[in-house]
Image 1: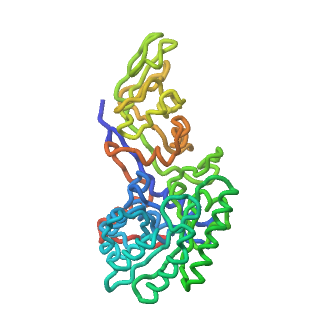
Image 2: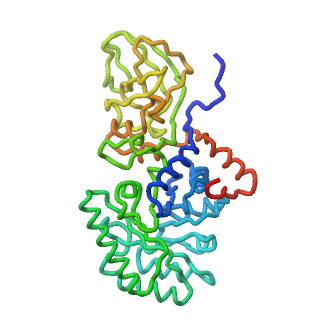
Image 3: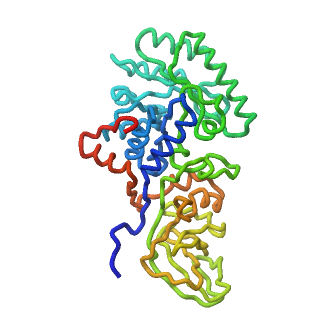
Length: 395
């Protein structure tokens, strides 16, 4: 048996799909700008290559959760606008301000701390408004004080209010409409205080694709960029014209023929109802495979067919029933990927485990090597080999 020239466990990241998804979404939401969200290591896909691919396809800026994520992109040579919005209460904003990172401000205290650390630079700020999610963001009762102070700091040259933003709760169309009304009141308060933000943004993938009234000046695209559905109503990535970016695959580690009645994996939750062949896949919950998918109907693509996962999903491995078909050690197993290839999707695995596709891809662990692929991979490699610059939009 000749060893294949690829890893034992691998997540293939199709950067051409990133670019195609960005272009597809940008065409639907225009003239709103696209903020490509690459927090959490680009939902487990790799922040730097995904960021470059998204920017090359026309995204205007990047969105991350915290300062470390933003500065890691800067250290990699990504010089596009970046907005970060979830901060340590004791955060040192000075490196981010020096690096031109745009900062979400969710309270008067954060606003004051950002301004105090700006030094001789103007800190770029996006005021975060709580429109009903009850997380971070300025509550309505505090808007007058915050927007008035922001306007004062802007006149003093210590900050620039680049944006005002919020986030939907994704509850219902009616709840979305209610949140939009709250957001409109916040924007009116900002205008009354003398603020003129260039970017008003509240929509993520779900609302951006569904509700034109939510798009304003920019939309934040996360899960849609990765080719997964933001909807919980049965709408698939194919329905949306999007392609999954991540293909999770491995090689069969062992094959065993068992008799009827044989149990498989911990607890013997499953027993063979006939003589059959079992294939061992070397991925488990340590690699992000949801343990809750046990018994949930999860499948993989193996030998050109979808095969059921049987028995308890363990830390490092799970078992697939291949019946009487011929399967050999070393054969490729696609856990999830593009449905056009016949593979299950990450959303299929999410349904089998009672979660969402976001969690399935984001939890893929460090033992799984990420391999960039697709046309955009060459542009990423060229950028890294040169000076770390980002290809121009549309390149």
